[in-house]
Amino acid sequence: MRASFLVTLLLAGFSFSCASADDGSIRPEPPAETPKVLSPLPPEFAQLGEPCPSSQEPGNYAAPYIGCGKDGHVGIVIVHRRTALPEDAQKLAGSMGNVQVVIESERVWVQHTCVWCRSFTEETSVAHLAYATDEQIMQIQMHAELTNKSPLRDAEAWRGAIAAWKPKQ
Image (cartoon, rainbow, N blue to C red; front, side, top):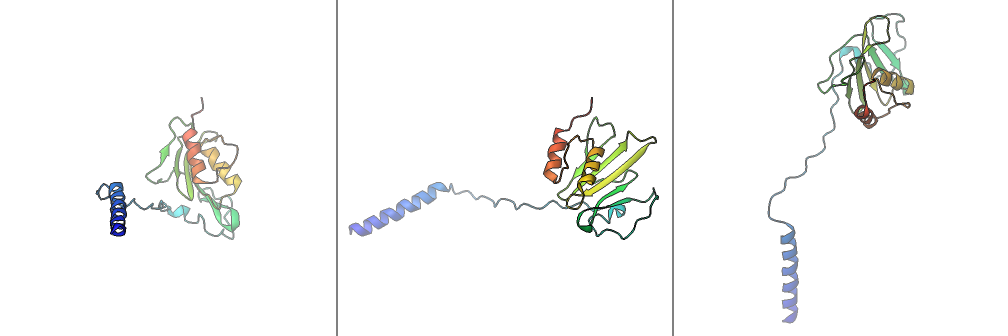
């Protein structure tokens, strides 16, 4: 008799502890993390991340510059004009070159006006972070008016550098 009373008491205590931990409300499942979808590339940037072309026409300023990067893939594409950027473009207010930046998981877009060029020049660059060389990353950082001395190799490093960015006085 005592054993059955003890078992009943233990089960009641266990049930009570479970019931008190749950207030009876229905809690939704936490949303699953959805990976950031990359913005579609305009046609002139389509070669980004693809295997490097066997040759490029030298001296054709109107054609996009296709920079061969790591592992034989295109690491950067530069178009010598402004193009449509993805919706989440961030304007660096106060930049000398009217800089706009888009940071995605694998790519960085930088649009700027060259303030050091002898003629008015606008450029839009897209770098694939996995394939761009350190020199290509440093070039796009310079276009974004970032003063970091080492290449920003991932999206988080870019976000941190943009958050710390201040216009030149």
